[in-house]
Image 1 (cartoon, rainbow, N blue to C red):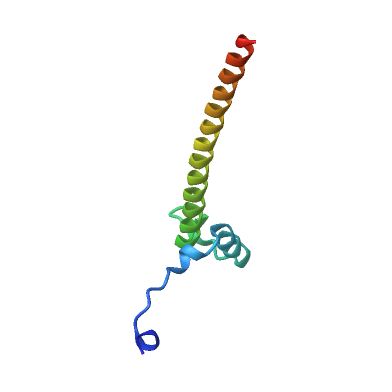
Image 2 (cartoon, helix red, strand yellow):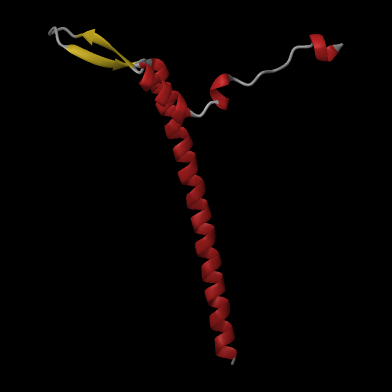
Amino acid sequence: MYNMYGAKKKKPIDEEKNPNRVVGGLKSQGADSFKMLDEHGQEKLIPTQAYVRGLEEQLRRLNALVIEQGRDLKKVANEQQSVKQTVERFSKVR
């Protein structure tokens, strides 16, 4: 009974979607910006909030990926140094 009528927490849609696809979809639909006249009568392209949010999400994910890869690179460098020291110790023994 609870499963049928109980409230379920739903994930926000933005977390499930790939930001690259969101931004690409907005661009392809032409919904990434709108035209506006400035005070001099010239047209300016203003990005939409959805497009900017998509770009910000792309940047957040890329920054997280760069940080993670930096940690992995540091681990590999430490392991390489450890192996190098072990090999040097064994080569001195012989």
